[in-house]
Length: 485
Image 1: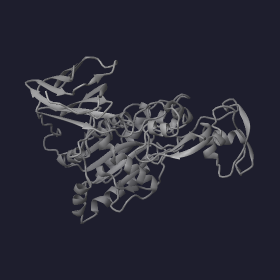
Image 2: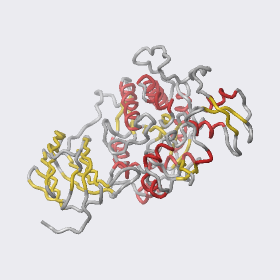
Image 3: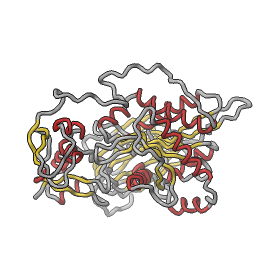
Image 4: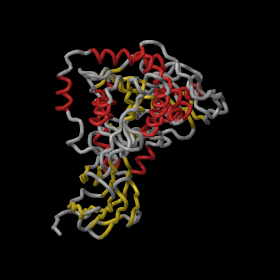
């Protein structure tokens, strides 16, 4: 066995999932691992001297996944019993956001070609639907734990079913399970199927839980059309790194720039904008829209010069009400039908109406509804105390600090005007004292642990102070509340 000079590392967790072409096994480790790999017949050995295992990690994990049968944890060694496979890649990933050091094993399976089924003599036009994130990259996470990757996959599957029920169109998903697909592969899927349209489906998030509404984005060659679009593009473009794509396989600027240099004509980009406008008008019927116009941002996944492409943000999963809506199967069905209808109408060049698969039931008081809010009455308002408004404060900032909606705060006070020195009513409990907190903007490389240690508090205390905010995953530029020294 070779000799190593490294700090002892501990395997803290084992995770695994399967994609159509490979099975991935991820070992979360405490330190950057130094390892040596040896392939034997139907077996993979990963030597990590002095490796330790957390008590929660079982010594034997039976996967029964394509290409991988069992993982055995032994002294200084990880042994994997394999099935049929074509190739194995083992690599390590550095910490990013809330994810630790990771040792990743990708077991690639023998190729099995799948073609888009077509009726004899009829060539269907293909719409490629790209549910964002997946696998190790959950995307945005709501206050109640709803994950973006699950919501967008559910909506994408419903869209596929609606489109495949038509005569002239066929839908293809870039992923149909909980696994991550790199940007380059998503784009190649669209090209391989000669797609007439490419739809990337996502759900938005913001550190303020007040943001609401759907939005539609197209590729911009110059930059983002707004600060919000710029921040969103940066977050989505990090997905390859969070999802665990090897650097050589990830989309890099050099490759994307060489593609863009060939874009002499902007015909397809104009088509994308036109379709985006059509889509917004259709979605307005069933959902609130944040931006009434199509936004522009430099998304990697939209860099398909030959295919009209849009990125759709279904809503804000960081908003409590929209999180509940996005998790609702009925609301997902409404969104899927609206997007499918707009897509087919655009490609067909005429208005196409798609019938709902089942008769929508009346929305109960417990079911999220798009067109109206629950009535606010005196019984639903919290117990109040008096508060003097400080300079620079707004209805939104006070409501956010108290963890309630702006309209609830206004209802407590029955006034539209708000000026410094004015005495208003705020909830008696749950509000953070403005004099005992400071505001901190998250910097590059920050983690909850680093911020907590820098300000001499515990991570639990940091989470408690920011209980009205969604702080996981931590976002660059986000504002956190810290105790004033």
